Length: 391
Image 1: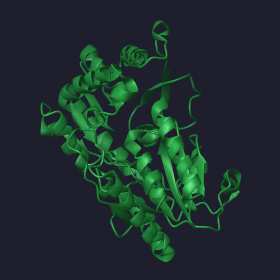
Image 2: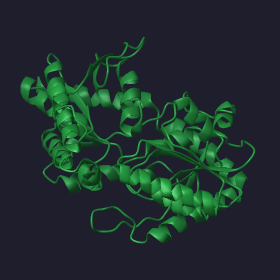
Image 3: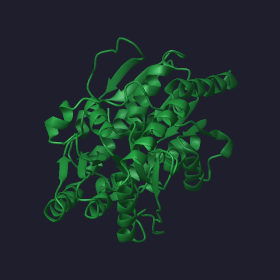
């Protein structure tokens, strides 16, 4: 499981299965049924559509949606997450006359850089999302800011059908880890301050601006860049070039160019002086919740739902952000954005006691406000209301 939506479904399903009769329909190879939690059914794309092009990838997603819709027969309600499954939920609604709930983890109109990644497939993903969301019986946004974005992008959606149910965090799995075996494996010095980034190499996550900012970080601090799964060869090459520049001009950078296991991430983040989230678009930013639960101070962009998670001056520091008005979400002044990131990172590096207090406050906030059990109860209540209304 990786990415905010994948993590969300994993944990939500575990707690929902205690409240409703739940089956998860997901992409990928057949997998063993978990000892606890929901039943799981896996789906593969149609073999006739196999290919490496972006067009083929979009059509493969649609083929899975068709098969998922067929597999949902007998359900009283369907709940889809992301455009990859939205069309399946919509078709099941039409086929079986049942309610469709769609959780929005991101919005295609807010991610125009995906045209670079998917080419014409971006038009297909946008079609799937619009069709499903406009017809859904309920749309769940993961932050108040994202709820506003949903209505701005799709004004045909009735406001009364949009609810806000936050992402959650498992504070038992994500908790401070004092071990050092993972750090030693990757050459991270536990006795030196560090700035940690964890995420995919995609325009959305702002990795390129993090690397620009790194040139201005306190040179004594390690910059631990846990970044893999690039969207395109072009962005992969761009990040590689910037990592080389940081290494040559500043040094003290450790690039782990693959997606780490959860346990590895927890230990690396736990030892970070600062956790950095330079995203240019983030409906909520579950990665910040993970860092807070691991008791790390957070420096993050003031965008999307991030300010609803990170309390500026309490659990971390927010970076001002002004996006361009051309739809790209790129900063108006990239150099200033990078400098603002570095300024806040250096502020906490210079005061590790303050950073530690922010980390402690962040963990308290994660425990008190973002528990999965309460989020599952809100979701189950929404289900029951829709099913009862349809009877």
